[in-house]
Amino acid sequence: MKVRDAVNLNPTVILSEATISEAARVLSDSQASDLMVIDHHRNFIGVLSEGDLIRAALPKIDELASGGGALNAADIFDDKAEALRSRKLTDILIASPITLKPTDNLLEAAGLMASRMIRRLPVVDAGKLIGTISRADVCKAILSRAGQ
Image (tube, rainbow, N blue to C red; front, top):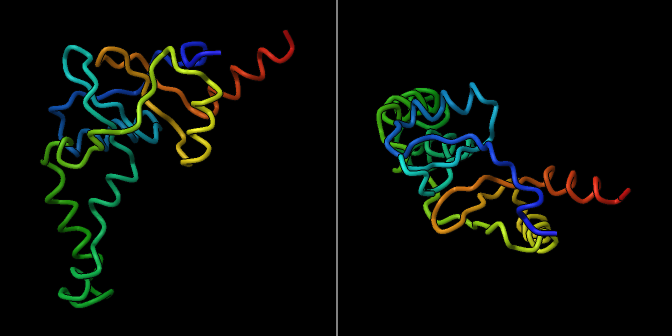
């Protein structure tokens, strides 16, 4: 089997010029855990996950130490979140994530996802986002063929 046999052709996408605030809204509205970032021509730019957003907003140890410790953490968190809202999502996205091609072997893709603990990967062909593949997509493809 190939990746193309299990690919989700309708991934949750966002345009690269969107703000971090817009990305947070799309993540929340779609209940997706990550967004595929594209340009107007569907060229693949990168991936932005909910974890990326949270990490960007969380105070770092040195910020806590210089800002009064845990008592002031909520204020630091609020300040960082406010500063993030209008920034472009390209400031924090993963610009060179692992990607798959539609012609890649599905078993190898499953092994990669399992060994690296990756839940979803973009499927890209000639620089264009084709879709995504998740561990659930792999399971469905493999198990639906098992009875054939």
